[in-house]
Image 1: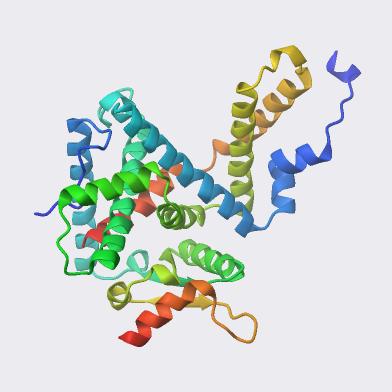
Image 2 (image 1 turned 45 degrees about the vertical axis):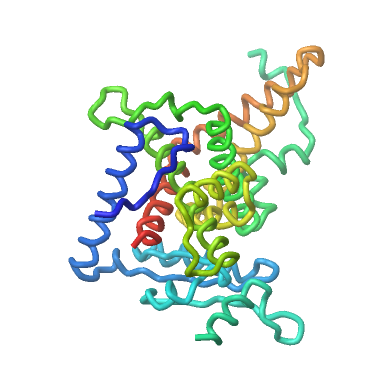
Length: 121
Length: 214
């Protein structure tokens, strides 16, 4: 099985710490697999919130939304729009995009890369 | 008995900056989350950078052992959070190398390690921003008031660190020390009842790292 984490030599970790981390991530990966195969409950209901923001208002709204979802037992993950690769987007089951417009309806700066990638698909 | 004979006044600006009740009244949740997330990831990155430069294993090379009588979960979170910095730096380095060299270009493990180390040692902004999003996810578990307590505690620690770098003995600042002790007591009472940010960050980041690797 391929390790989740490749730990380079320069990392200031002892051999025992490296082994502990590999074990930790192997356990996490196994847990994630089991929760997927066990079927969906509210606790495994995940929402990816994609944020397009210029001054931070949309981000504030996304944080409130993530908090509300978390309070309801769902798993909310926040991403800036320009950090989202198209492959990753295709893997997301529930997506909520919160984006502002500014000026004469232009998209925020951090949405440009995302939009270009989406158009190219 | 003696206490009743004293009256004191503190500048409002000090209260506004360091007391959690004032902080929560004056700052938006977004500002609080931004400050806390950035402080947290900068702390993680700086700590790792220092350990790399010193060539000393973190925590003396110790491994968390839940069976040990003196088991401290903070050790576990420290290791996991350090690995989060590494995983994100690796992810950013791979992305950048793919962009500059093309997706098909062969990236050797050694050249990737050099790029990753450079990103950590320069406290790269993209790495910081990506880690901040884990921190912000972790922070969604806190109420506004709890977040303000974390900010107050952080600002008090910054204040003490700044004082520690100056020669404050000559100023005989009893008021300063009393103020610090007073705020620390207020924060400690509240901090004891809220979950550790290191723990929440570890949970948020490790779940994402597993996803990145799959």
